[in-house]
Length: 616
Image 1 (cartoon, helix red, strand yellow):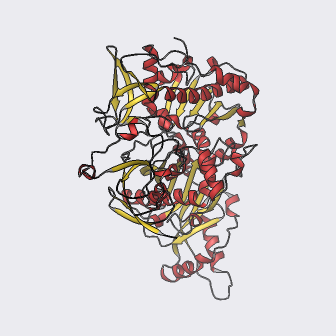
Image 2 (cartoon, rainbow, N blue to C red):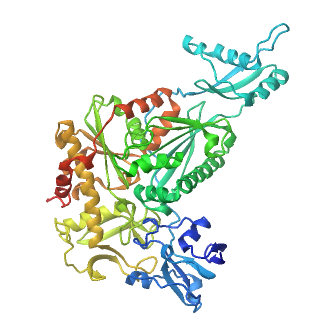
């Protein structure tokens, strides 16, 4: 097999690639995190790169839009008179040495790590205690291990724990003997349940825990002190699995075709790097991390654990496992203490995951008297309706429109994204992340723009884009232009197409239909819902008024909406901070009913009804 040099000019990086692989695969090999929300199927056009025109055998890109043909980065490399060609990285194979200029500049993403705060008693399942291990007296035959266990049991107050039998650990035996000999038995132990995770000198080293919310698009991580309960710091990053597709179905299909290993390792390596970042920020050592918790939707949960998502994409769409999973963290190569444990919180159903359970923990839904609607709006809309007496959950295929995928000028919440849109004096005004020129539109800006155009009657109730001074044609179809080529950041126009409006209608129709059918199943009307919690980054940054104007959320609930931020991450932390919350997570997951919308004949009718925009 021939190999060729692929030089990524902007990154000053050259790799050797086998003949026939795509440029997108070469970018993955180079760990460049390319943007490919369609998973490399050639449909989204987000993976555009420029290649040297004078290199032979580079196929022309078919079906280029005018925006793609004129795409320019303004880099010095393009000002030297050298001819470059814009191609789709996923559709262009390597058949010779190539120079590649990547076009994406989404390097300063706005990822939400903060969530609603609920105070709980500090009562972690991870116990840290100082003990003294007695020496073995002459004439006795008590093992080092049993003397260690006896010293631990003596620190417990309740009788049940005093009788616990710890599982033996051969790897700790040399430490016990050394501590008895050199430290007169004075030691610190870290225990969880029946497991003594470590025994070490009393030298004031911290004992740390880490919690992660593995989202479809982004990952948030938190470092906690197990003794004080203090959050030491937080970090966030894009989920590298976006290179394999914007939504869970694309990634599940990729795993079925090529195995789960590639997807599993990509997110595990990310979390290892994030743990290192957390410890650098807090001036701590990853060796002192003894417990890690993770939440995520069911597909992200399975892929992280290395479980095939086959059961999720084939009827009846059930999870392979739903219970809490506690495993040695060493199996995941996270770079933490070799004796640390990893806990994956339980899932509710095939598409209602541990992130939803985390949200329910964060808002204390099990003890809530009011009829509460909780929505986590992402590529997969997860909805729970209920209170302390009963709760029902469902999942809606909202699609990745609110994450910027399948939208002509869509992008994630990064510098250059239009994040909010208002109408002043009959003219559209855009707020751009970073304050500079616009490069595209993120989810919150998208629903704002549609809401404003509905109010201006530039979009009618059916979703049709009407004629206006800012309406032009793109590829023979109408589009509403916010910025032309000379006004935008990257020399490409920023606009809302008719197809974009239809994508939003599909997404908001699915979520709204789920809300109405949950209320019907609960035996109430939507008006009976007393409070609405909106979780996740999109929900945190969106304007509730715009969400109600387009019918994403029933308009009558406008004044009952409360953004709760990254509630899933908060739930992952609560499970570490209090062992009762850890147990509650399992209980709530088991007791929450699941409504399978796809099996309901009335879902399609309700969905169609919700496609149109509400009349004012």
